[in-house]
Length: 320
Image 1 (cartoon, helix red, strand yellow):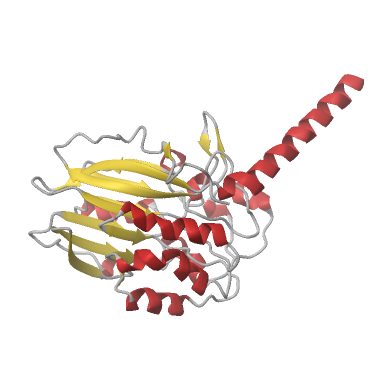
Image 2 (spheres, rainbow, N blue to C red; image 1 turned 60 degrees about the vertical axis):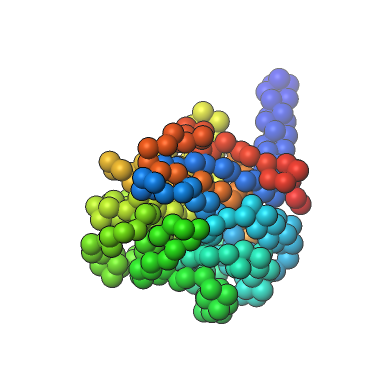
């Protein structure tokens, strides 16, 4: 009995230490990942795309705001924001402080459910249930229109159910995006159809990487789709990976780069935040990703197997 009691005490201490690490340290261990993907038409110059997602910003998250704003030093050609920027009704100024310098770069965005509705308190066990078995409860409405207006005023393109053609760093890009599939707000029929000729990159943008959406982008011939929503699983186990994806995407693709179909590439960001009611991450630090897009014939410096390798930004020290 004494040995069993010592075991319980040790297990309790380990559990408490893990929770403390996940809540107090890892969720603030801001991380830059760098990935190379062969998705451009032949003869196209490399393109640097910064993918940010799932800030879940609250007004007092100063270190996150500073770290995201410093990403401009990476000199991206294009910034793609895949939604869930807000987690508080007064968070728009904080989100804009974070993205401020990046808004001077060409950018495109779509929104997620936590741009439209605030977070709510939930039983943590519900997070481990399959997405189809959970009933979504909306929180209070958030000021997403103010955020959209501010980003659009600075020149970023709203890709929600829209198709855009832009030229960035000499590369002609066709971009199309959707409203959040997790809310079943997506209307792919509004962006479907033949892709234009003469573009060198066909880019799809969505918040939640639902397979039905990815199938549609692949069937229409897109080269790359960027998404967020999964938080990389938020809780990952060594040797197993993400416990859940919070959508119908398989766990193996919960974070990082992969392929979908015969030619389309997918990149899912693990995101930079969490719900205020579940402020923990384990083996899955908050992240932004610098994607170097290359012609299809070039061998990437980083392949899909090490696309999730952690790469320190700046000095490599966590900013807290």
